[in-house]
Length: 315
Image 1 (tube, one colour):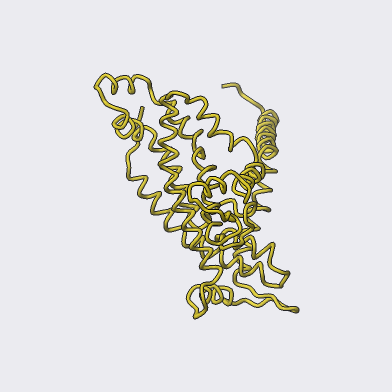
Image 2: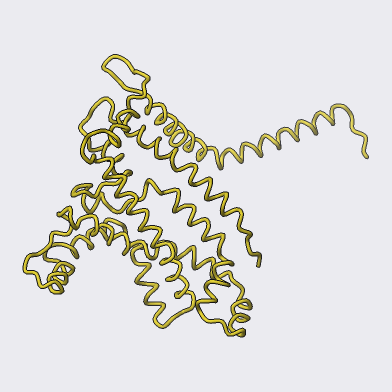
């Protein structure tokens, strides 16, 4: 090893410190702004919303209290008739159930696209179009389709033999079902890209070996495809369950929450942006969001623990 003088060693150490500092400055320049945005617009905002759930504001001061949670309890279990919050929770569960139904439908549809059935290119285009255009465009198209003079209403009048047109988005008897119809239309192709990417990574040799053994499409899907792409399916299922209390349709553009179509997420939005200005509208919305977040956490953690028990297939 070369013999360095004290001054040379100091210079070498100084250079190492400078290089280290430059490295960290470079890393901070890449992630620093994003980290700042995360802290300001996510951590601080969410922490502040938790604090607001326990606050009530007066003209002169802020009171720490559980009144927001008491109000929510009364909304659910009080002696009053069916409240908007109960209606919102009921509709949320309906949309969540619809999402669970669409989950296997999306997988099966992706599987047949993967198998390149007759006309698969056309089907793929039809299914992908809703993902390309904006939600506002499709909401406008859908509203015209289900309008009083629209083709959907005329078709329903024809098959029912009725002379009275139905107001699908303006009648509580039909409005929620009509919004759910839009959700089905938009949701079938929701996970096409993820499913398609997972299936495309399956070795061709595995599929050909199954075909040589004479298995049909059902056994291939159940015994080969599902085990090989289960990590992707598990992740999507976990994401589905995280939205158990935030499941919703395109209510804002279609009905504006009217005609018994509101959900929990829209109820919170409406409480903040559409309720007349009061000193505590943010506080009650924060309490509602906090309660349903706490209810979601054990469901998500249990599902994650359960999915981790299933051994992944390596290929």
